[in-house]
Amino acid sequence: MARNITPRETDYSQWYLDVIKTAELADYAPVRGCMVVRPNGYALWENIQQQFDRRFKETGHVNAYFPLLIPNSFLEKEAKHVEGFAPECAVVTHAGGEELEEPLVVRPTSETVIGHMYSKWVQSWRDLPILINQWCNVMRWEKRPRLFLRTSEFLWQEGHTAHATSEEAMEETLKMLEVYRETMVDELALPVIPGEKSEGERFPGADNTYTCETMMSDRKALQAGTSHFLGQNFAKAFDIKFQSMAGTLEHAWTTSWGVSTRLIGAIIMTHSDNDGLILPPRVAPVQTVILPISPDEAMLQEKLLPDAKEMAANLCRILGIQRAQVDMQFHMRPGDRFFFHLQRGVPLRLELGERERAEGVVRYVRRDTGERGDIARDAVVEKIPVLLEEIQKELLRRATEFRAANTVSVSSMDEFKDVLENRGGFLKAYFAGSREDEKTIKDATGATVRCFPLADETRGTCFYTGKKDARLAIFAKAY
View 1: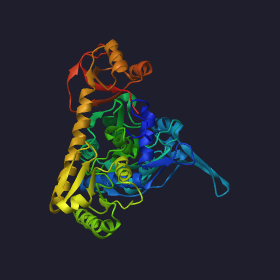
View 2: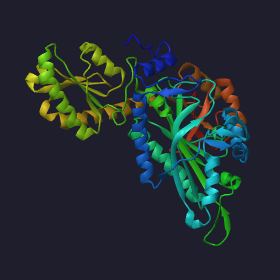
View 3: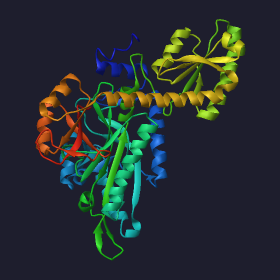
View 4: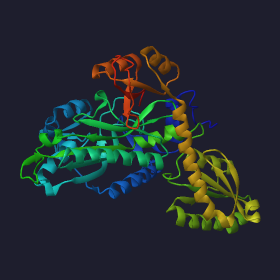
């Protein structure tokens, strides 16, 4: 067990921060609640970003950029929206040495300013749909910050689309939810549950909010991404009108959807252990590190290092630029070099010493299981991608089984409280309560409705109100 990392069992919050520190993913900024994303963390974010961005473009979306500063009057045009975000807003009142005529809000999200621009761009049904995404930063003043999970400023993407009909907008909302699910499961090895949010958890100003919920290793839930059907609320507030094919003047139907650097927190808390970070190979900045090792300086420099560099170059042609690297920290002891990469979550370590060179092999060590073995040197390019794929699948399998083992069905409030207090995890229960009922349950237990799973349409008796024909819900304590 690593001495520089607090065990999860002792202090989960400190374990999480220690993993981030030792992996050099992020650090605290001078402004309270903000963070500096370090190169290792940003490389991870870039890989996550690329996986999503590719899928966005495959579904017809294009990227654009909208301003950081939003007129305060824009937020006030949509009553529920401003009510939901007002406590979190950072407001600029002075600029250029003068007081502004109208305060400017640092964007907490961009529905308002994008709605304003869409009202200028949309005139006819021919202008629809608009399918735009932007990668940017947002600010929501956070009183209880935690690196990646909740910071005042964070990086994310926000998709904003406008459509001619409600059916098209709803199809878009669910399509992007599926894009999120697929990417999170396939690339991040996060077994998420797609579902609809309850009224109490809905995005301010949305008609419906859909989510991907996932379980962390402390059995708490994390909202990994959301997709919102906004109906005509923002279109009416910002006058997004178009002439229909029938010649009538109609308001557009809009959606928005987003994921953020919170996903890095999800990866850490789903896969990592008491030794440090564990990363899914498909998004790991470095998938394979090669360590030439020898006490003989001539052997190291003249034989092993050139061999390692050649191996890395061959692997990079298969894995991608910089996805295989050579460790040249020869001032460190071999054990310290091993641990350096282990704590940074590199999925696969290859060791090349005098014995391996003489036998024509390379020693591999998996980060996820610690399994080790030898691979023939001439089979490295063929075998390493297979091993990496095995690691990817193993991480998803472990996380999926952990969630299943910590999901319990309950049918009464007493059972609900007992399971939550003594086991934690996801609680499956039929629920037909009101927004006020949700608040009462949260105040009493700390648990919220995470979602109504889309994959389970069964109905039953509400565990809280006793009403019939209640939907199946997942409750949990959450980040």
